[in-house]
Image (cartoon, rainbow, N blue to C red; front, side, top):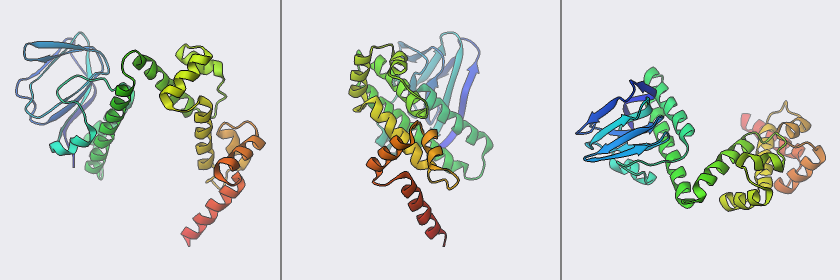
Length: 266
């Protein structure tokens, strides 16, 4: 089990502050820079932009300084080296996963658990650290697949896709989606398929279907309401698409779920 020894979320130090630990901190340190920093190795300085991460191993030289404003999130933790092996994280070097907001959100949760020490907080911290490393590993894998000239565009598409699928109940026109990445229609569709191996329409329909299936588990929800709340403007189209995808109508799906639920309750 991972154990957090000390952590901080969006911590601000004085401008141009320096952290210097020639012999490390005695444990692992995962750090997410929120402002421009310089990370030093003996006789070598490397500039880093916001979103930069570094994982220091125990006993490793730690020396970093803010270019001006100093703000970061960090976790000092104890673990066995084999606990980190499955994630393949770079060690003692700067890297950019590209999902700064997601990582910072997880680190905020770790910080809250560390401060409050509520019931089962050790288990939750352990789970959150694993979640953090999975998030880093996934994005590093995507970055490695789309390195070079395509990487900035891939990150733009990734953010746009998240917005589209998160708000799948909205009416998304081709023009709206294209504007999110500043591309024409043909280029937008070409890159979308290249990056995500599907079309935006198929992606959106799948997200809407998943939303509708979840809504239909609510006994107080009418089929027409579920259709509207999941982004299907036409009930006949929703019913036809649902049946083609799930092998039953939305009403039949809801009835089957409720039947199984009532059997479980007996």
